[in-house]
Image (tube, rainbow, N blue to C red):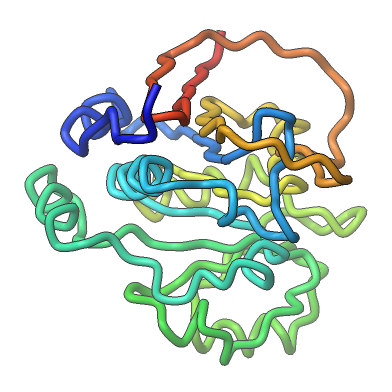
Length: 242
């Protein structure tokens, strides 16, 4: 098997476009090594290749909103997230805005309004928090983002089911969650994960790198294989609710 691309954009668009756009759905997207590592040197970027990046771009293209945790924003940046003109044209042809929105979940709101996530956003970002978050921080972030208050904040936890409903009320029914692992864990605990898309990278990492999910209760959940798509030496896996 060679490292050459085995997938193209049109095939991926057909594979990842949602069947029912109006039905709220949360899709997870991660890349992991074949020995289970989710990062190399603390970042996920070292695991992916051009095929993984193409799949991620297509998933962003078909999504209404890209959802990430505050820790992922601090590590990965996410400033100026945008699809290219060809993908924007696909979105227009399907009745969507040129660009997906981007949302961050944060209990403590320890986010700088001057961060590139806000400063370089191509559409107004969304901040998802709870009622117990500091009012001054909420007010500061409301200058640069739409702030959704979801839950009373008991245990310093955002009510993610309420967050999904609030996003859908904004017309953001198709949610692409790109992590991190703790947000994945919280969504699992809330039984809100409808799809898991995993790029299996042909790398062995070793060390103490974490898994794609952390912090959740142990509970087995059956999923069904949506597709297993070879892409060079990388494998694009998609699992859906059973």
